[in-house]
Image 1 (cartoon, rainbow, N blue to C red):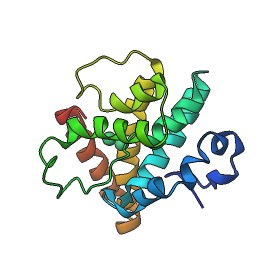
Image 2: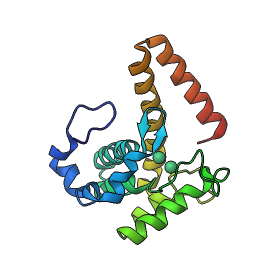
Image 3: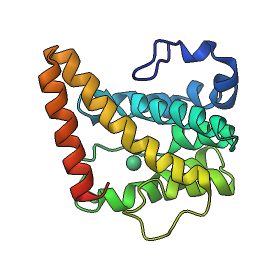
Length: 181
Ligand SMILES: [Fe+2]
Ligand SMILES: [Fe+2]
């Protein structure tokens, strides 16, 4: 069952969404992202699913390209190493992983210009180029929202404390604003 953070829906039964990404969600390489920790308590597959689904909803709401939003979201962190221990990118990971994800996505599945820009620029404003498409602005917001929601859900699961939850939110917000990520 595929479920996004803060949602109770089985996404494989949400036809409008699932029809956009069913080929990706049955691919072994994409599913292998479930073996990598991404944010605390969240795998890279779960994070990618979260970004994909909420990016889809947001772009559909604004009548943008929701199919590209769903696919770009699912592929935006398509890299196969532990970012905390991988030697080559240990220091440059925040800047480099979007390019690595783009090359992987293009080689494995093929991406169009819009999907490619969403993947390459999802870390904006950490990346130098201003996004050209509204969908790309959307994914930069959704990616950050999902990271905060994932940490919040983890904190609530672990402690059940709303005070701790508020502390986590505040900490994440300060980190995100300070590091501009
Ligand atoms: Fe990323
Ligand atoms: Fe991400």
